[in-house]
Image: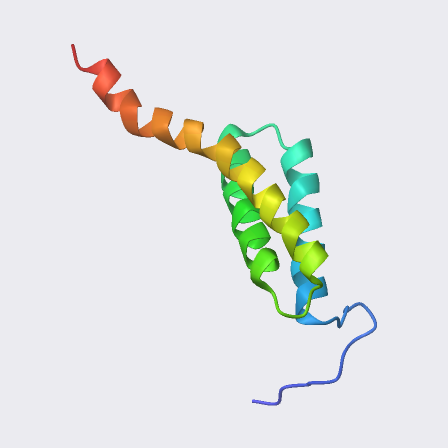
Length: 95
């Protein structure tokens, strides 16, 4: 197997933190444009996860990490009520 390690013209090579940030921005765009609730939920969870890792990333400034940590808290609060509702939904059906 011959693996070409040279970047192609259509590839982007960037530092890890920038790649994580770019991926998070793409997920945010997808979340905003998506009509499918289950896909939006999965994207929201991944956004929350990425923000957690960005808040811990040593390659980012302390100020940026603080912003990412606060944003993670916002996304965490948005997702948690939906997760709780999903866990309690089957119990509501049993009567």
